[in-house]
Figure 1 (cartoon, rainbow, N blue to C red):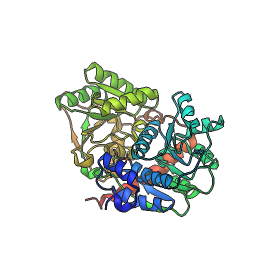
Figure 2: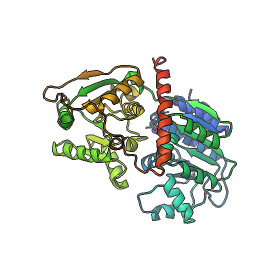
Figure 3: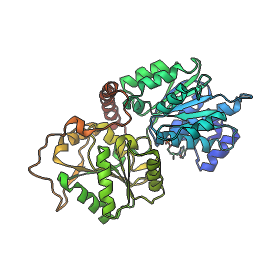
Figure 4: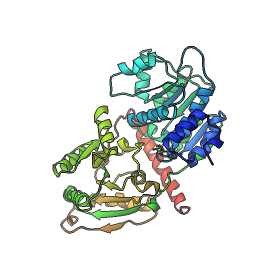
Length: 425
Ligand code: AMP
């Protein structure tokens, strides 16, 4: 299938060809025709599937083919859970809309609102926003979404994880009832389906998994190691393996900072990305990493989710996630687009039960290695760390709804991945 046959305008085709895309990705092929028909869509798609173009292209097509005269109300709202994702989606809207007369703006917290407000005042067709800043500016009467024709909810599952349910409900109440709704989510828990029922009207359901990011396509290895020797081991692996770049996951923001400092002391350029970093610092870290100036990006799950970091040769779990599905998300960031990927986990005694759960989820046992000089501590307890120490969800609004959501998510996803494992090529 070609982009031409999807019926997109010449201006969009020109932008697509400028990006170098040859044909639509599976999610684009499935979602674009329904969106162009004006249907509501519920799409199961993660980052890496081309989902952003999947909704941006038909949105821009609709807006440019049906222009509104004179003043410019906000006609489309794209809601994302994180600032980084908002910035990435905005960039896509800019890129694909290069040859169209469509104005867009992005608003998110953590930065001065003035430039955002100045842009809104000039009139925008497409607004990309995180929930907090959107409600903030709305409460100050600095924007109105009462003329929105198309509402897009990106990474709906992460929205719930981050406790944005109430904010989303508030936002929905501010838009006209009659509108087109598109919802994207990587997972489909009971909570997500409930949310979808409340938002979508007879949706078309489409599904796509990222190419080559299935567990089978990735080489996985576990290094059993004493907790106190993890830093030494990762430095050795990076240096002796001459790794060009790696994405390293830690469980906590504090842990990310600590490891980053130690890597820098070992003369390995590194930057941390997590919820406590200022927007400027996060953007700088990500840009540096993408440009190849930063060798190691140390991230927490929440900060890394939704980031478009293509072709990563190495993903390291400095600590295993205590939610097994996060392991699948983490390692899905390597081995993309046909490149060889390696996912490495440094596992200490107290993470033994996490490892077991992960292996159960992915339906395979992971090869184990012990490096001389970095052996596990035979006297260490295999008791897992207490729950509170494991996980820190930043930007959390409602702790109760969050924990409920996580439980629902866990159940649902383990079924999903197990169900898939037999079909994988
Ligand atoms: P996304 O899943 O939206 O984050 O997109 C992942 C990456 O795929 C981005 O870098 C896009 O620029 C790229 N991409 C999107 N659509 C296509 C396509 N049809 N062909 C090649 N690359 C694409």
